[in-house]
Picture 1 (cartoon, rainbow, N blue to C red):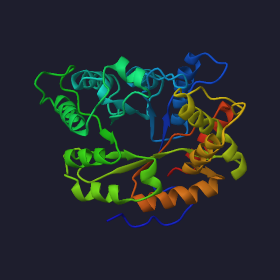
Picture 2: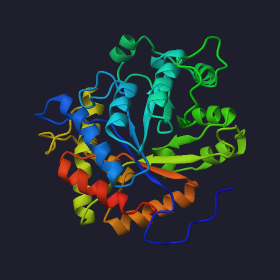
Picture 3: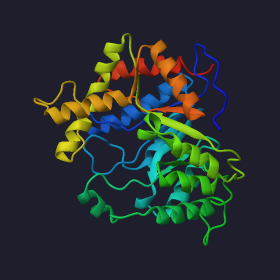
Length: 332
């Protein structure tokens, strides 16, 4: 059963956080994307947002972030209050002990500020998967590795993850489908996005029904993650979503996710045009009041406890304005 609907108001009923994927931009050095991520985190903290998460992608021209723990360390060092996390660390690419020790180092250096989002996505293309050494990763293996990671973080693993004695930071599962069942059995909160938010909510209902309370998470908890864009008009908000939509459509045709660009590729095929429209439709966008209504409804329908917004566009000034407008909708 979902929580009672929140009463309407001028603020969202749940905290708001940002997921930044360190998007590269056409004509710019990729390192600038990482520096901007750190700058954006500082601004997110000043705006009072709840968390700032970074991503893991490998050999993708459009994304500079390949090592969440390294970037988390830089973001946490550049800020003082905001929670810093991974959206996420992809467990197929790492041994649980290594992840545990990286996380413990971060928690020891920045006590009470570190979150660990764990996913099971493989590399973007077959060559990347081969380079990472993992071409298959069944959910059973994910469940085993995730259980071992938790054991290391609880000082119950077969060896000691150093530094020892560090409190376990929150662990969340980036999940759809079978991953939700793994999270439920382990008593972990989930981060969900994509089709789960736009169609049948049965997977979330199953997660709640199967949930086994844990000391760290006594009740099921759902964070919803999606593209959000706020601008002065609905039309302008839609325009700001297009650079990401063009990149997604182009990646389906070329197998390479490209840097953001201010203008569309020279010619989009009818299929790519369709993909662009689908991508835009998946986002929540419009004026601040329009976004408030839509996000509030989505929180009500999903029973979410938090919104993790992956706001992105080519123009960094427009992006900063969108972040500020989103922060103004967060609870005071």
